[in-house]
Image (cartoon, rainbow, N blue to C red; front, side):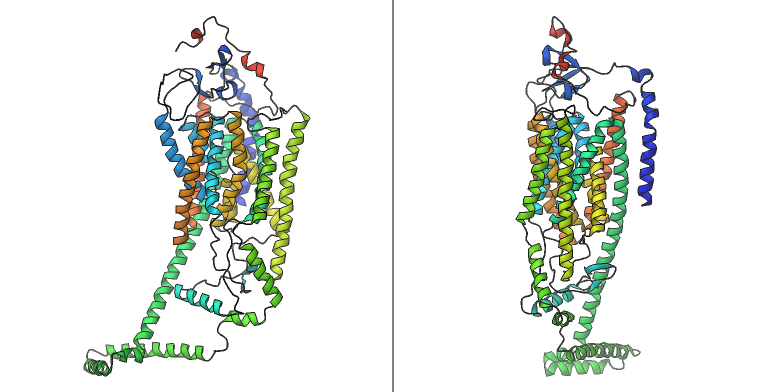
Length: 631
């Protein structure tokens, strides 16, 4: 809370300085309009200041030659420097970018983030895309990566694969949750305990589990995040590039710091748990060896000859040394007595094989039946109804986005921000998302209450939905959406760390946020490609690269986490990704300021319309086009 207060205070101070900086930007050299212009082949040759928005079909600008040019994927033939149709070859740059995108997709998807904080800076720095084209390529990449991750997540199961239908023991400090059955137990003890569980009860016992994607959480948080992102995009339109990049760097740096703190805490906890487990295994093995060596039946198993030989050896050893063997014999006798006492205690309690059987005698049969029904419902790997609701949420938001336009893309029905219909559709986005979230928030609370009534075995990382939880999660998820829309990244970089800090299992958090990212990135990617803001061959190629990269990378990383139990690895990699995104924002910030001669632009207009005719108003009327473009 203290860190968050300091962050908000800093943001307020930053906003308070905007008036001063923009006033300074309007003086001296910053007031001049003599910026860099580019030759655009359209309209028989015109001069434009931004190729991506003012020169259709020629999105890329080369300041060395002062031209707008069209770029082709893996282009190697007929290259001519300064030719708008066949500019520099980018073969090796495209190959290097494909390798980086492939690796980034696997790591980012395994950590539950889209990777936009990496793709956008690399698109500008490595691929040399303009900001809007880099953003569009990023959305196509995120779409592919999240789809590849979804293919893996749909088949994966929850880390807790041995959920029991018994009430369990209450977890101290966590009302409604049960203590883990297998905590502080060795592997042998765990296996034995599971066998006793299956043998007990009414003969219908089995283990339950769930999908790794928390669909209930996704159906509530996804629309809340989308609503926040809509507001964030509105605010972003008003901010100049240097300002929202400053916000992005600051917020991502803070998020990275908090995620690293959580990572080190989780890593130390897992390391301590592994050491304790190894120590218990060694102690148990030592006790078994001691019990075996002190068992007379084992010692005499070799026959009479062996017994006589052993007796002779014992007799020969008696008196050797300074009483060492007498001490060893006394120690073995003490261990044997302890073992015998444990055996006798176990024999004295034949009617109570384990505590679970005793508890089930007093378990309400109706509650047990409902509990098993709920466990069976939750174990469905492909819940068709919930998947259908996610598709419905996506379809509704996509339809409204196409109708309204946004992200630099025109509306399909031709409305602009000057029309009343634009604001009706804008309000519809909030009504659709917030209404959807409120509906499933109510459903989640009812579901939790029904399960609590029958002593459902919630584990430590489950979220028990109530009004307070709904209010908390909806507020911070909406805030995360605002931040994501404001700084132009997917919500996973903000929402993922939030879920981890709140105690959600890292594997569940990454799978759930990756599913939510798919809903937003897919529609935005299609809009970018249809609008021509990103070359379709680049969008398709990097979509496929990220799809296979995410599938392969996530499969390998998930297998490692399951094999080692090191879920903290996901948190550490997530923190590193956010830190790299922070560096990318800072680099782009200073590169942008440098290209603008360190002039700070002021706020943008919320509604700025440029007609098609305006694109040719600055046409250079020359008799010979080659005089304008002599290369």
